[in-house]
Length: 101
Image (cartoon, rainbow, N blue to C red; front, side):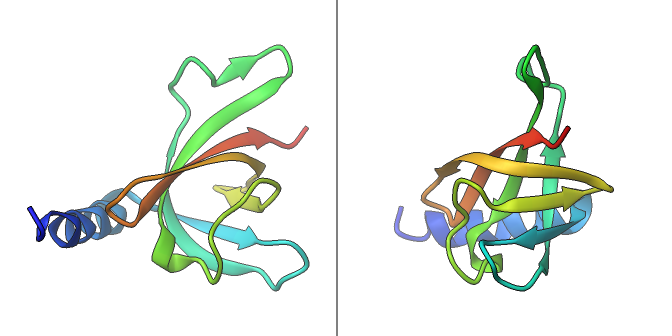
């Protein structure tokens, strides 16, 4: 069981290499940086009366500091703001995003 997080981390990296899109991130007043992420927009939260929502699967190691509420991301030319971060024990996270109007 102790090898599980390390093996899962390798699998996560392989998934991002195969299916990931380029993502530009900005945390606070910091400089923009590039990561890879897998965008999911086919969920129930995609369309809502208050906007368009999505989820982004990322590796925490790709961030200079942990992703947080208010971080701004651009995926495939569309701008989003992070409103929730769910971290898993394998070093990955799912960022819940709201599209900018």
